[in-house]
Length: 465
Image (cartoon, rainbow, N blue to C red; front, side, top):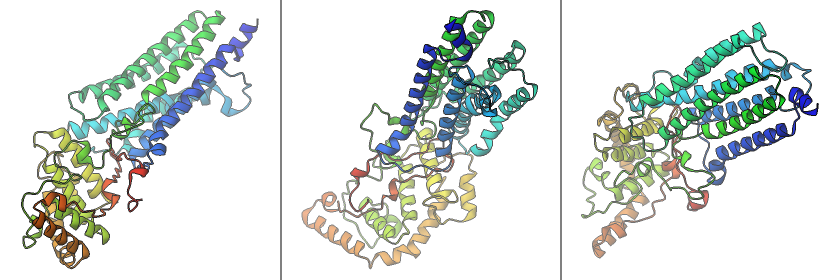
């Protein structure tokens, strides 16, 4: 009799086990999502790099809590509207739970498809595409709320369950299809692996939920089956939200940090993360002295001179053009047939320097900016050629004139004199130029592979803190 009572209204011993497992999974989800920012002191990104993963976390919480509430794991009296089956089992479990989770993943795959397969920026921004993807879920929930087909156990008849399972399956199939369309791309990080993991766990979850519903409908009078099935349902949902969540599609470098990895790769530039040879962080070996009578555009090709000039430009709060110049040089180090790495680097440069409101937005003409943003080939070797020419003219006109009378040039000249006397230019030119840490800052307003470089605040020099 006791089992029968708790099977109807909740509060069985196994129900409390299910609630405990659900609470633990929520804590692990929050810890996993917040750990990189708390432990490594990373700045919180902006744009879709922040809100798409944040929406996944919110949807996971909604989904798990709605399952706990709708299958009577907790013994409560439904006196208020927010305790009703339609609030938990329809709206939170549907559009704002499982539907939102899958829609976020579809948005991420949609962006990856356009950027790496079509080699262009997506025509529809994610904050517009996501509500469009959710519309069928909202329409279905509104129809169920209007028709009121749920019984006192928050269950629907087969006439209503069938179209809802079809809706779940259609989104899973769309997710699978979009993922298959990008499986040939040789991603540098874990995007594809995590997408396929999402496909597997979402497919298995839908299959399990269908089987659990059928068993409960056929053997409605078997109390232990009802109690056991909702225990497994809660545990399956807990595993689902933990396995489904990932940063890889929006912030692939961040996804490499987990609670199991106390140390992470130290990436201080996108070029270093992509393995670009002679990237902008490391000093290149110089075999000949620097002739300061050469044109400025030629001098900037020299790494030692460029570091000195960059430090001067940063001291004037006008270093964006020089940083842009250096990262375009790094892009030029990549082979033209290495389209994947070129796209990673090009997209990073666009979001850091080109888009309106970028943290290091450079001063280029509107026409040049639109040509880059509307480019049909993000891997094109001349993507930033016009912008680079415009910025070189600005550098020569403004910073180039003042640099020669600055202390930075004097320091560079002194280091060059030491190099000539010792015959070791590389070690003599290894001067601390106090380059701004803005070099390591990336802001991606709508970037499916947004990067935040991974290093602890304790690793910074006092001048950078």
